[in-house]
Length: 446
Image (cartoon, rainbow, N blue to C red; front, top):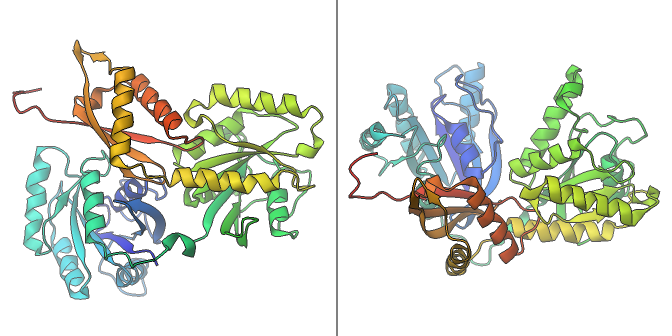
């Protein structure tokens, strides 16, 4: 069973922003309005080399049990009961409030292991506000800014250290199905594909676009004898064409399903060819940090197969450079053609999405990449990028440290990403790079 990390605290202290930052995806809604989060949200991610289940909770408020805030408080309490580690978050900008101290006492009484997190601690005032939390008696607080991604690497490492040791021989991966979302434009053959996989007419299909309105999740065992939870989603159209209230909800549901997925199969109608909306959906998958495989559907109806496939590959190479090398599998859900090749492609991309590269091997590649094309000059001085480390997987995320590293131009960042992708053979997987400058103690001012 995966260790549970529960985020708790008053409303509007940035819990959902912290949740999104930890899991590497914008799964939880965030806003300046208190109380946006009402239900618990959960997501599996990797922190410091450990797979964990991170839980975002509603803001802690004192209220009668039969009120909405009271039910939200009860939900948070249930999450804490199952926690291996609680991240108790407070707002460093406003400091500790009486409510923070009240809930800190409650958390201490639960006997759970607690890590105090001072969020919104950016700037010089953040350190002082962080130190204020020592009075809670919960150990050393950690100052972060989830919004600006400051202090997150240290927090991830501390979480990993605080978690109970993994049991010998425990296989967390085997206990969980691979979450797979089938996405695409309306009438791209998504539901027909799911029906074929399940061996039954589970989804209503037909020539009319938009028959699927809700995102439907089904567990099944794939051809590779491994467990999957597949979600068939409503077709995603251009925003200007989504006008009815029900379709807007369907579109939101489809995007939500993608946020909850680990892998995505992008269904593209091979008869009609690739459209701009297909590319938009692919960029959405990449933005959410999901691995992706493209399924060219209705392959049985394509007359010139060689031409259709080449046109698709050419369009992808030009318009989807951030997903260079993505796997394309022609299939027919009517005849079953190509399905036997789809799941090995999904599994291979999933393994890349989970990949962790040893630090020594990573830095050997980094040195070679810097020697091949040294960092450019910025403001008359050459950037000095010193070393790289992998922060997390799912998707592979790295931090590069060096003098004025944060000034590295986007063109050079793209060079590093593309070079890494080729060196470690990681097609179709989003790769994230964070840049961290090192302070110069002899520099008197900025």
